[in-house]
Length: 233
Image (tube, rainbow, N blue to C red; front, top):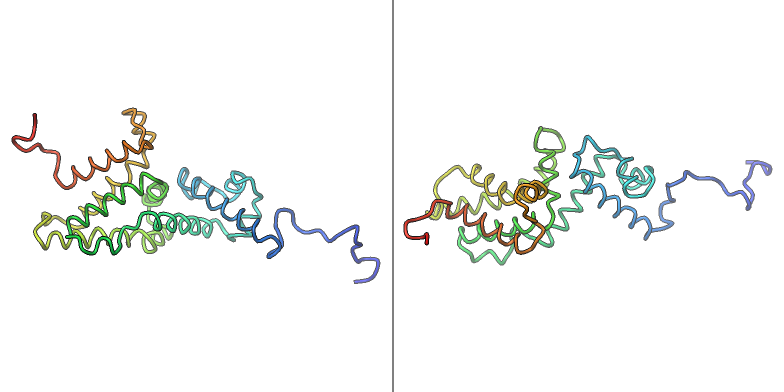
């Protein structure tokens, strides 16, 4: 570079707008990354993967599109990182398995796991909404989601059901059918909050109604809805 082509102190070399130099603003980088993850989760859950662009996410986060590529490289990686972000948060707050369940009999363990799943879904229905969008067609994203997270959760239900059947606590119905019914009843009601509010005027953000819904789901699953003789007033 010759003297007359070198940038002067008054005219610094230009760089691409919206793309920070790596390592120059760690706190700002982390804040923008967290904001993109939060916004991406909401938009993917509301609209599905295919209907969303990285520009949509960047605009909703009040950031440039180049920031998405700076932090994540692609829309699919952003989608995966957003789900990892969600699952870390839910796993820390609502563990489906733990030492506190070790001494419970299979049926009691199954009830506790179901209750936790209900509370998790009520707290944040984002995961259920994402699964609804991805679960309608087989894809590489669905495969990744199942193998990375979903199958693990189903295995907790499967194991409790299999042990309960072996002990004669649960009818010997197909485990896959029962696990799917329990998970669907526990989770997807809360992803349909607007529908429930429109039909019944019920606000499923109300903690008292969340507890009532949990009681109802568990009663229906484990005791059924047919009244036994002498139980009605």
